[in-house]
Length: 318
Ligand code: FUB
Image (cartoon, rainbow, N blue to C red; front, side):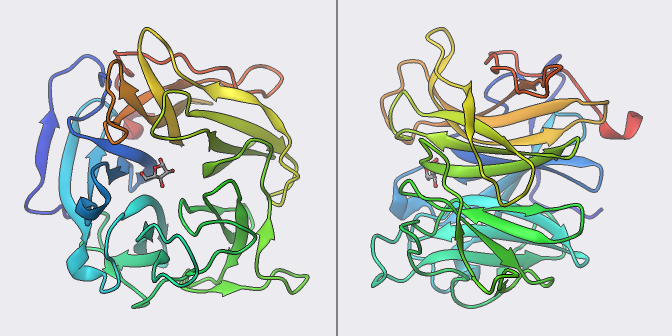
């Protein structure tokens, strides 16, 4: 696979990944396996007017990471003004798609919302595919931010999204560039679980749908992650409990996560942001990784946050 010429190794010769995984203020990390490599696409955590690009990071083993600067940036999104947030990545149709939030719109009169950019390479450059947002309005009270795209076993892609305490799901067309109606003719379904704030994420394991989300205010210490288990991608998503929250010995403001599967059997990693202890700036968020375990009943065990991070887990050796 070709890589960007500007790639930069960020940590080498370590026994474990360490936490944070890479230096810099980065939030809302979307972890994904692309072409037998781990990738993380985070938000650049800074004042909104400075959030005009996204970097990405790749690794063959979760320990050594390479930075790919500015895989998506303002030059390739004409309608981006500020607040480029929370990427969601999909590999499909021999391309790579980044769904992103832009402009942090506060009303339907403001331009912005959720857009989609496409590239031939996971390191970009990603270019806005539509010249406008895919979703540019509040629907069911959901601010159009914080999208996550889930592919079900039948090949159907669904996008879960929403801030301001409301979560919608939509059905994506096969080209991933438009929304199509559900079987009942509706375009948006509200699937908001109890206590939901933002940051939805979905994974499927043993036929069950694990829906996760962030609760609370991301600028504060009590931000956390909770989850539900359902038999369908449509829910209902009944809250089971928290899986990730502040730890007085490690960090606070813990949330907006994603989950990747390692190469081993039932080997799961949660990737999230947290505030370092004593950090008072809401944008002082770093990207971290720890193991996530399911118990024998299929419930997710509370995650133990660490400074060490995780040991090497090369995908190709398994
Ligand atoms: O990083 C900007 C915003 O902070 C995200 O969209 C929210 O989920 C929160 O993490």
